[in-house]
Amino acid sequence: MFDGSTYKRCKCTEPKLDADGQPIIDANGKPKVRELGSACPLLKKRDHGTWYYYVKLPDGPGGKRRRPRKGGFLTQNQAKEAAQKLWDQAQGGIDVDTKETVAEYLDRWHAKRVDLKRKTRFGYRDFIDRIQTCPRPPRTPRPPHPGDVPADMGIQRDQEGQPGSG
Image (cartoon, rainbow, N blue to C red; front, side, top):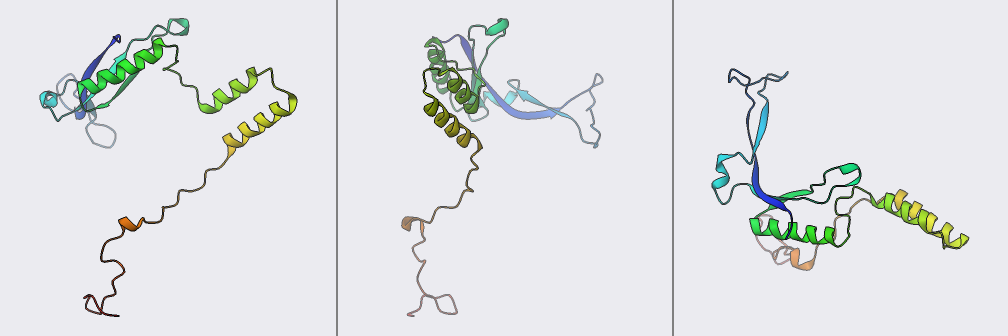
Protein backbone atom coordinates (compact mmCIF):
# COMPACT_ATOMS: atom_id res chain seq x y z
CA MET A 1 0.00 0.00 0.00
CA PHE A 2 1.23 3.48 -0.83
CA ASP A 3 2.70 5.77 1.80
CA GLY A 4 0.83 9.06 1.59
CA SER A 5 -2.61 10.49 1.93
CA THR A 6 -5.78 11.56 0.13
CA TYR A 7 -7.65 14.74 0.91
CA LYS A 8 -10.43 16.90 -0.45
CA ARG A 9 -10.12 20.58 -1.31
CA CYS A 10 -11.68 23.28 -3.47
CA LYS A 11 -10.84 26.63 -5.02
CA CYS A 12 -13.25 28.75 -2.96
CA THR A 13 -11.78 32.06 -1.81
CA GLU A 14 -12.31 34.56 0.98
CA PRO A 15 -10.84 38.02 1.65
CA LYS A 16 -7.51 38.20 3.47
CA LEU A 17 -7.88 39.96 6.80
CA ASP A 18 -5.42 42.08 8.77
CA ALA A 19 -4.87 41.84 12.54
CA ASP A 20 -7.98 43.96 13.19
CA GLY A 21 -10.19 41.68 11.07
CA GLN A 22 -10.47 44.19 8.21
CA PRO A 23 -9.96 43.13 4.56
CA ILE A 24 -6.54 43.89 3.09
CA ILE A 25 -6.88 46.11 0.01
CA ASP A 26 -4.45 45.85 -2.92
CA ALA A 27 -3.12 48.74 -5.05
CA ASN A 28 -6.19 48.60 -7.32
CA GLY A 29 -8.59 49.06 -4.41
CA LYS A 30 -9.82 45.47 -4.47
CA PRO A 31 -9.61 43.14 -1.46
CA LYS A 32 -6.87 40.52 -1.56
CA VAL A 33 -8.21 36.97 -1.43
CA ARG A 34 -6.90 33.58 -0.34
CA GLU A 35 -8.00 30.05 -1.18
CA LEU A 36 -9.83 28.14 1.51
CA GLY A 37 -8.52 24.82 0.20
CA SER A 38 -9.27 22.00 2.61
CA ALA A 39 -10.74 24.43 5.19
CA CYS A 40 -13.86 25.17 3.11
CA PRO A 41 -17.03 24.40 5.10
CA LEU A 42 -18.80 23.30 1.91
CA LEU A 43 -16.49 20.29 1.45
CA LYS A 44 -18.90 18.21 3.51
CA LYS A 45 -21.19 18.27 0.49
CA ARG A 46 -20.65 15.38 -1.88
CA ASP A 47 -20.52 17.50 -5.05
CA HIS A 48 -18.19 20.25 -3.76
CA GLY A 49 -14.43 20.14 -4.32
CA THR A 50 -12.23 17.39 -5.73
CA TRP A 51 -10.02 14.69 -4.25
CA TYR A 52 -6.22 14.92 -4.23
CA TYR A 53 -3.43 12.60 -3.23
CA TYR A 54 0.17 12.92 -2.24
CA VAL A 55 2.70 10.12 -2.07
CA LYS A 56 5.78 10.05 0.17
CA LEU A 57 8.67 8.79 -1.93
CA PRO A 58 12.18 8.10 -0.65
CA ASP A 59 14.22 11.27 -0.33
CA GLY A 60 16.01 12.40 -3.46
CA PRO A 61 19.58 13.59 -3.99
CA GLY A 62 20.83 15.78 -1.19
CA GLY A 63 18.06 14.58 1.12
CA LYS A 64 15.40 16.61 -0.71
CA ARG A 65 11.84 15.51 0.12
CA ARG A 66 9.82 14.10 -2.76
CA ARG A 67 6.04 14.37 -2.42
CA PRO A 68 4.26 14.16 -5.79
CA ARG A 69 0.72 15.55 -5.61
CA LYS A 70 -2.17 15.40 -8.02
CA GLY A 71 -5.82 16.36 -7.84
CA GLY A 72 -9.03 16.57 -9.79
CA PHE A 73 -10.43 13.15 -8.87
CA LEU A 74 -14.19 12.82 -8.40
CA THR A 75 -13.98 10.22 -5.65
CA GLN A 76 -11.56 9.32 -2.91
CA ASN A 77 -11.24 5.80 -4.34
CA GLN A 78 -10.10 7.19 -7.72
CA ALA A 79 -7.45 9.27 -5.92
CA LYS A 80 -6.31 6.23 -3.93
CA GLU A 81 -6.06 4.07 -7.07
CA ALA A 82 -4.00 6.71 -8.88
CA ALA A 83 -1.73 7.12 -5.84
CA GLN A 84 -1.26 3.35 -5.63
CA LYS A 85 -0.37 3.20 -9.34
CA LEU A 86 2.23 5.97 -8.89
CA TRP A 87 3.61 4.22 -5.79
CA ASP A 88 3.91 0.91 -7.67
CA GLN A 89 5.74 2.61 -10.54
CA ALA A 90 8.15 4.26 -8.10
CA GLN A 91 8.79 0.93 -6.37
CA GLY A 92 9.45 -0.61 -9.79
CA GLY A 93 12.32 1.79 -10.42
CA ILE A 94 10.56 4.41 -12.56
CA ASP A 95 11.47 8.00 -11.73
CA VAL A 96 7.94 9.34 -11.33
CA ASP A 97 9.03 12.72 -9.99
CA THR A 98 11.31 13.75 -12.84
CA LYS A 99 11.21 17.19 -14.43
CA GLU A 100 13.32 16.09 -17.41
CA THR A 101 11.90 17.07 -20.79
CA VAL A 102 11.86 14.81 -23.84
CA ALA A 103 14.54 16.99 -25.46
CA GLU A 104 16.80 16.59 -22.41
CA TYR A 105 16.20 12.83 -22.35
CA LEU A 106 17.03 12.44 -26.05
CA ASP A 107 20.24 14.45 -25.64
CA ARG A 108 21.25 12.35 -22.63
CA TRP A 109 20.37 9.12 -24.42
CA HIS A 110 22.38 10.11 -27.51
CA ALA A 111 25.42 11.19 -25.46
CA LYS A 112 25.72 7.85 -23.67
CA ARG A 113 25.39 5.69 -26.81
CA VAL A 114 29.09 5.00 -27.37
CA ASP A 115 28.50 1.86 -29.45
CA LEU A 116 27.19 3.69 -32.54
CA LYS A 117 29.09 3.98 -35.76
CA ARG A 118 29.90 7.51 -36.93
CA LYS A 119 27.24 7.64 -39.66
CA THR A 120 24.54 6.22 -37.39
CA ARG A 121 25.48 8.66 -34.62
CA PHE A 122 25.28 11.56 -37.09
CA GLY A 123 21.90 10.36 -38.38
CA TYR A 124 20.47 10.07 -34.87
CA ARG A 125 21.78 13.52 -33.93
CA ASP A 126 20.29 15.02 -37.08
CA PHE A 127 16.93 13.36 -36.39
CA ILE A 128 16.89 14.54 -32.76
CA ASP A 129 17.76 18.09 -33.80
CA ARG A 130 15.02 18.13 -36.45
CA ILE A 131 12.44 16.86 -33.95
CA GLN A 132 13.38 19.52 -31.41
CA THR A 133 13.32 22.41 -33.90
CA CYS A 134 10.48 21.29 -36.17
CA PRO A 135 7.74 23.92 -36.27
CA ARG A 136 4.34 22.40 -35.72
CA PRO A 137 1.80 22.98 -38.45
CA PRO A 138 -1.18 25.02 -37.35
CA ARG A 139 -4.16 22.97 -36.31
CA THR A 140 -6.78 22.90 -38.98
CA PRO A 141 -10.34 21.92 -38.30
CA ARG A 142 -11.19 18.50 -39.58
CA PRO A 143 -13.83 18.27 -42.30
CA PRO A 144 -17.24 17.49 -40.88
CA HIS A 145 -18.24 13.87 -40.69
CA PRO A 146 -21.47 13.10 -42.56
CA GLY A 147 -23.07 12.13 -39.25
CA ASP A 148 -22.21 15.56 -37.79
CA VAL A 149 -24.18 17.48 -40.43
CA PRO A 150 -27.69 18.54 -39.38
CA ALA A 151 -30.40 16.50 -41.05
CA ASP A 152 -32.00 19.43 -42.84
CA MET A 153 -28.73 20.73 -44.29
CA GLY A 154 -28.67 20.52 -48.04
CA ILE A 155 -32.41 20.98 -48.37
CA GLN A 156 -33.11 23.93 -50.61
CA ARG A 157 -35.41 26.55 -49.12
CA ASP A 158 -37.51 29.29 -50.66
CA GLN A 159 -37.34 32.97 -49.70
CA GLU A 160 -39.52 32.44 -46.63
CA GLY A 161 -37.29 29.67 -45.31
CA GLN A 162 -39.64 26.85 -46.16
CA PRO A 163 -38.39 23.71 -47.91
CA GLY A 164 -38.78 24.17 -51.63
CA SER A 165 -38.68 22.00 -54.67
CA GLY A 166 -35.80 23.54 -56.39
